[in-house]
Image (cartoon, rainbow, N blue to C red; front, side, top):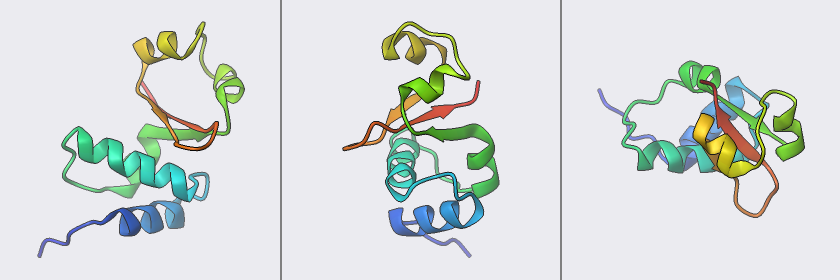
Length: 91
């Protein structure tokens, strides 16, 4: 049986298994995954592949880069609308 995963289901399931993601972050990540054609939702795989940061300064603690464009050459950067928060894909 196949179940359609909506934004809301994705966000709720992701946050339930990893409270480091905000609701807005989970929605931004869902939209990114949908845009790149990801069809399967595995919350464990998502948690192991992406991390949400409060701001660019927090990202600097884990990555070396000059600006967001430079960081985007190293990994996937997802900006969370209406916040300073970012989601970075582990590479």
